[in-house]
Image (tube, rainbow over the protein chains, first blue to last red):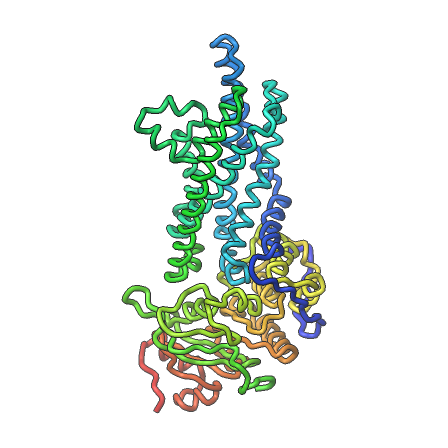
Length: 288
Length: 254
């Protein structure tokens, strides 16, 4: 039985006219609206909120203790701990930002809200910007939490490397945006059956991105392919900084150039899929 | 037709609109216009092309041929400007069930740039019998309450054109009549154009100034309900609908 008793619908209730502040082009208000939709979701669900930190913390525990063990076997090579934990934290930043974009889209598919969103004045660019910002908000929380835990458990202070890591973190965010947009486009194109891509696609690139080992470990043919990925440059650069060397700006530059190509490709793929969606009615069918 | 301005720029103007998916022609060269302030019922059996037409009017689908103008602006080219001034609801789409009523309406008020969101929400919720439910989780509303909440969302921005897909499908007869009364009153207050689909033929006869009857992608009848019935020699729209949908027999004007 309902706790709140509904009144009968009545045509006499006064309703003031709407005061509309319509901003053409890209509107911060509309982007904030979509961000609010996600933040309300997290505020209302403790389980969902905990899920943001649950997997990253478990990853950190497993990889952290494994690194400590490996370091002891090798006679206390502290840099191995730094490489593995640093790799894990930066990978999580990449993965969570990428995932935030596609899962935000899936939230609207799962709740049959996609049509409501796309018949509102939100543009595709605003829609994507909101999901990209959500990813950054998530990793600010996760990043600081993991950094604090790594310091407490393994005496690994990622902040001692200062601004040296920042260009690589920023490049990983750009790469994650590109991958997230492509993943979302694929889910829109192939429907809910493709939703596993939101979790799986990033891991397809993990072995070639040299997250936990240097590119030199890969067979020569794969090394050539690996350097095409901006993530590879980011993780190679990260290792150089963690080893105490100067910031390898060549890796920063290559990652930035490859990210520009990736984001251009992502924009083209998304625009192409949206065009197909408007030709074939995918926006109506995705929810079915 | 109180409040209908037949000489103004049409609220909706459709010219030779066609939509084909491969070889399947779902909407076949239809043309019609809807005057500002008019209530038009868009009827037809399942598969007649109603949803496809609505999707083209809302910019969710690109026409294969033909032109759509809403409030004088071309769709989907002027999509963002048009969608800010119209709204839509359907029992086949939902507001996120895991958010509260207030949270959902806040999100959509911001999407539509409604500055006086709070007073709009309170007034509309009261009008649709949902006062006091702001804190309720949307997924826990009854289907009738969800339908009415969808209407509240669709009216938040005072749309000049309101597109409705079976607006009273999940309501009991009393609730449906109350909603029809509210829609008539809002039309009278604001001069809003209402373009809606329905399978409830009695409702269509009572609410519509005019109907468009779609069959196999073509408009086969158009006009005030009584005129259409007279022309097609049927007693009720329900009879006409059944002749089309159940027996597949052609209904033609004498």
